[in-house]
Structure formats: C-alpha cells, structure tokens
Image (cartoon, rainbow, N blue to C red; front, side, top):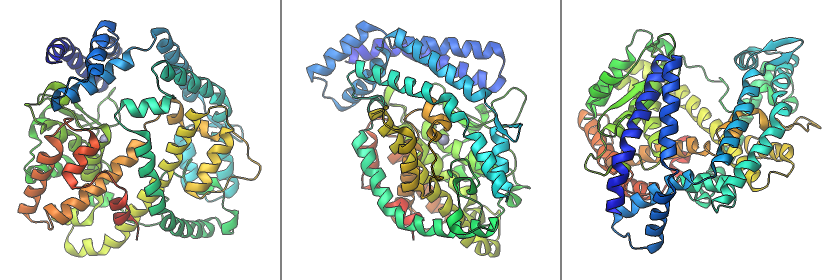
Amino acid sequence: MQEFISGYEAKMIPLYKDYQLASWEANVNGTDEAWARNEKASVAFISFFTDKNAFAELKELKESGMVKEPLLARQLELIYNMYLQGQIDTSLISQQAKMETEINKKYSNFRASVNGRQFSDNEIENILRNSSRSDELQAAWEGHKMIGPVVADDIIRLVKHRNKIAQQLGFSNYHQMSLQLSGQNPDDVTRIFDELDSLTRDNFAMLKGDIDTYFAKRYKIDVKQLQPWHYQNRYFQEAPEIYQVDFDKYYQNQDPVQLASKYYAGLGLPVDAILAKSDLYEKPGKNQHAFSTDIDRAGDVRTLDNIKPDANWMNTILHELGHGVYSYYNDMSLPFTLRDAAHTFTTEAVANYFGRLATDPAWMNYMGIIDEKEMKKIEGDSFKALRLQQLVFSRWAQVMYRFEKAMYENPDQDLNQLWWDMVEKYQMIRKPEGRDMPDWATKIHIALYPCYYHNYLLGELLASQFNHYVKTSVAKGNTEADMKAMGEYFKTNVFMPGARYQWNEMIEKATGEKLTAKYYAEQFVQ
Ligand SMILES: [Zn+2]
C-alpha cells in the first residue's frame, strides 16, 4: 500500500494542482482561454482515475484485508473510492454528460411566461417577494412551474441512466452510490433526518401558524385560502421577512475583510497568508459568487469573493475564511490524501459556524460594530429571524432528501404525487386542488446537482453541535482568552485531524458525541 501511494502521489499531485490553479484562473479572469485550460486540466485529473491496472491493484489490497495500519487503511478507503468512480464505462459517462448538458440548456433558455410577457427566475422571485395581489402571485408561480413539463421526461431518463451506472458498480441505485462513495451510510443520514423531523415538527407547525397569520393579513384572505404562491419564494426554501432587522445599515461604514481578519487573528488563527493570495473584490469577467479553495494542501489557500460593505458579504467572508482556516491549519505531516476535511459537510459546518456571527448581535458588539444598547434592542428579533430561517430551511431540506431518495429507489412511481406528499408533510403547504404537474422537476438541483442537498443541512446541524460544545466546554464567555481557547479547540480537534478519521468518528472525538440533531433543536426550537 505504501508503495502504491508513493507512485500514486508522484503522478496525481501535479494533476491536482494544475486542475485547482486552472479552475482558480478561470473563475478570476473568465476568459475563454482560461475556461478551456480549466476543462483540459479537469479531464486530465478525472481520466487519471480510469486506470484499470491501478484499480485492480487497489482491489486486491482491499480484499486481502491486510492493510491494517490506520492511516494506510484510511487512505486505501479514500483512494479506492476515487478509482471506483473512474471505472464506469466511458460511453455511459459521455452519454450522461450529454443528457445533463441538454437539460441544462433547457433550464437556461426557459423564461416564465406571464400574461404574454417573459420573466427570468430573478424577476419571478421579485414578484413573489413584493406583490400582495393573489392573482399576480399565482400567475408568476404557475408561469415558473411550466419548466416542469419541459424537462420532466428528460430527468426521468437521466435518473434511470444514473441508476444503470450505479448498478454496474454494484450499488442498488444512484442515491445509495453517491452517499456511500462520499463516505456516508444512507441509513445514518436518514436516521438523523428522522430525528430532526421529530424534534422540529411541532415548533415548525407553530411558527408556520404565525407565518400564515401574517400572510393572511398581508393578502387580505382567510388562512384557509393560502396557496403555495403566497410564501414569497418559489419553493418556500427561505424564511419570509416577517421580522424586521436591517443588518446592512450596521455594515455600510465597515470593512468586512478587516473585521474578519481581526477576528480570526484573535482566535489565534491568522488569515493574512490566505487573504494575500485571495481575490476579494468585483471585476469584469469574474465569478460573481464566492468560494474557497485549497490549491496544493500545503499552505496555498485562497478565497474568491465580491465583497461589499453589507451583512451578506460579512457573513460570506467569515464563511469562506472558515473553509480557509480548516484547510490552512491542517496537519502538514499527514499524507496528501488525508490533508483534507473529514467530509465536505464538516468544512461547511465550520464555515457556517463562523458565517452565522455576521448577524449575531453579541458578536457585533464584541467587534465594536454596535454598542450594548443597540445589541439589547435587536437581540430578540435577530434571534427570531435566524430561528425562522433555520426551521424553514430544515423542513425544505427534508423534502429534497426524501424525494430524491424515493425517486432513485423507484423512478416509475407517481413522482408528481410523491413531491406534493413530501411538501405537505414537511413544509405543511397544501397542494393546490387537483394539481397534477411535475413540480419536482422545476428545482434544478434534482436534475443537475443530485444527491448533495442533504449536506447543507448536515452542515447546519454540526455547526450547532460545535456551538453547544464550545459554549459549554471550551469558551463560556467572550474574553480574549475565550477566543484563543476556541481557536485552539477547532485547530486541534477539527482541522488538524484532517481526513484521518471517518467524519462521525472525528465529530465524536471533537464533541463527545456522534452527529446529532439535538443541539440544532436546542438552539432553534423552543
Ligand atoms: Zn461553504
């Protein structure tokens, strides 16, 4: 195994770095040449894992059961999964890519038609958020839902195709394969989602009652007449704005980068080296979103942002630097494969943990953004807004996870009905009478970003579990010493272990318990 790893690293690491750098350049500069180089580097990296001889060698090592030294065994598990994905028939892969491109084009070209006018997704969202006329809302919502019939049959074909690939590799379906290859046991994930469902159901029902009362008043209708288009959002995935705290005004004269940098330095986790390599502000051709990337797993960590002085970008830079410190403060003595996060959702959890601070009045006071009087004034509504946001999102993530799981188990069932069964059960929104449309197909993630959505919610649960552990066992207050203790805690227990342990083992070592929904419930359900 050691010998295999030496040969593997010598060839793979340069391909990995090329790919990361090319992707960085393409996102920063956006030129056609940069995107072409990125595609080439990506193909070179992915093709590396199609090597049949290398896979046969790994398979033999795995089946021998003789690789027992923990670090070697863990590397075997991770590298084996990388190669396993590379063993799919190349013709099946290119067919899949073709199907995905076709569907992608249909989504991109679709414009909702409302009373003869064409509307983009953003325009539809604007109408849903701002209009208070039911007929207008209904027309916008129904107009947007017309993408469903355009792509539904294609998606079902794609789902069956993905299942065929999974079955070729020995998995029962694509959902099972995706989770297992990322190191998640689907039964564990379902158990956590069940736990969260039972912990949040009653509280959500209560808050949903408040939301309904608010909307009935806003639209001047009876609560019983509320329809899916009344919730200010195409999917009711975000909380409606029923509590008014304007966080942006606190940040309009602040420098989010300087605040974040000062805060992380206070934790004993300085981010200067990360910021020096990063690309922080808007420019033409650049990716308009934000991400963080580890170029070489040896200290070249960067984040791409488009920072403006507002609450959203304060959250984003804290979030991205959360990913950043996770990578940067990894244990450099670990082998390359293990100098990574325990799972994508564990790094998401750390990023969320720090990102949430941007709208936390206690943090804003600690950083000198608001005084104590202001903190007291907005504390109540800030908490209510965050709680609503979390609960609404958690119920929506339930729909996504359970729908996808059931769809891959049986793509021939009545998916239109399955979707509304989930929406009614978890989001507590009634299906419009007699509706039989592929509304599930209107959510692009189902088609093009499959079997990943649940990780967003697992990240939130773990952020709350960290929060509980830090508050009770590491840093009870807000002193400088508390901050240092917290930084040290994350560095030693979460960042430095890297991918050395399976994610649930890392979580248990770091918090004394395996991943649980109970601290999320403790924080947001009362
Ligand atoms: Zn993130």
